[in-house]
Image 1: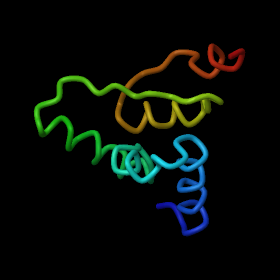
Image 2: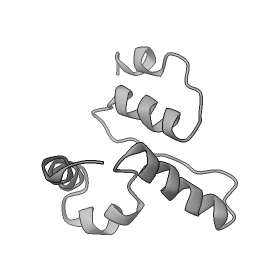
Image 3: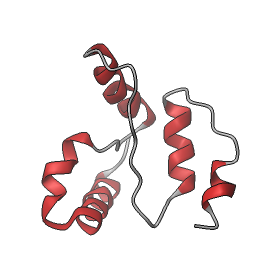
Image 4: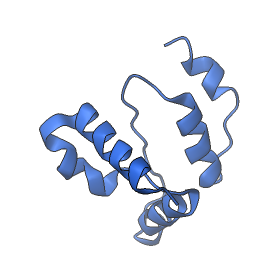
Length: 86
């Protein structure tokens, strides 16, 4: 689980990406531990979703994307390599 410092960083990241809309996007953001990410995606599936779109904002964090994909059981192949040049 993320500590207070990590939670503050996530909050700062949301503000940096979304400015005044950060609080609006906060409930939908995939943040927290791997288990928390799985639980959040699972709630969408339980509500009837058959797909979940994940939007990334530049600058891309390919390692975080791969970690999130692994947490929810999605296989990625070379994502970090493909995104590193963007």
